[in-house]
Image (cartoon, rainbow, N blue to C red; front, side):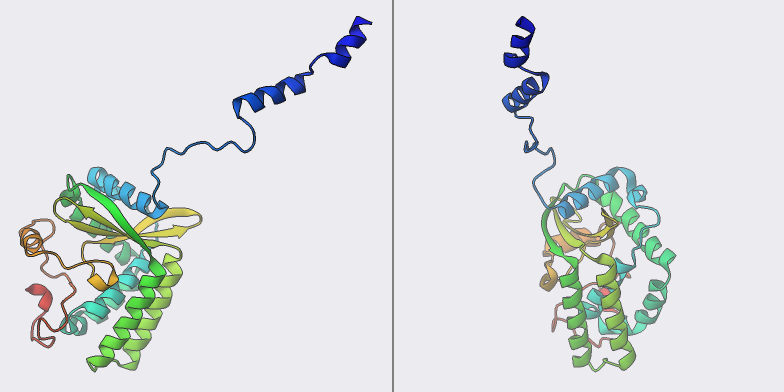
Length: 257
């Protein structure tokens, strides 16, 4: 009789477990707080990459990563804002190098190594992120308009712009361009992320971006510091120029100024 009474009124193991779960809040809908900062994943990835570069230099570059998407975007930005003389002189070789995956990765590794020394102690934090595809389409459209205005819009060059646009959009996919502002030289860093096979990685970076694409014109003080910087000396690099500030047909690359 007592055994029957126990089965009828005593709590079962399953009932006890439900009570414990309900009392402790360990049910299915419990939300655990994240230890990650409350910012976009692209910004977290960019900051992690920069911190890695500070300590590990080019060892932070993922082996076998495809950097052609970033290289295509970089070429479009150059066509949209760079010196026409520099474009005429350097574009054929740039397009040849772009078609070689080892060269595109080597160029990125070289930039990372060049930036590493300056990034150490620069105190860089991400401040903004924008979708890469919107930037690609705008740069391609601006490049076409600008080259037409300059009388450089040949069929082959326009076709190259479209091919670069398609390639950049395809490879960068849902990636972003992240801006990091720094307390010291290099003052600004722009990092490009790419989502591939569910993994977010950094495929490109630069310290120069025209204002119409989310960058800004550096101050006179920033320029003076940059020109004196050993790792970031700007000789031979293509930089945006302010429209109308310099004659676009000077017989030497404006980038050398």
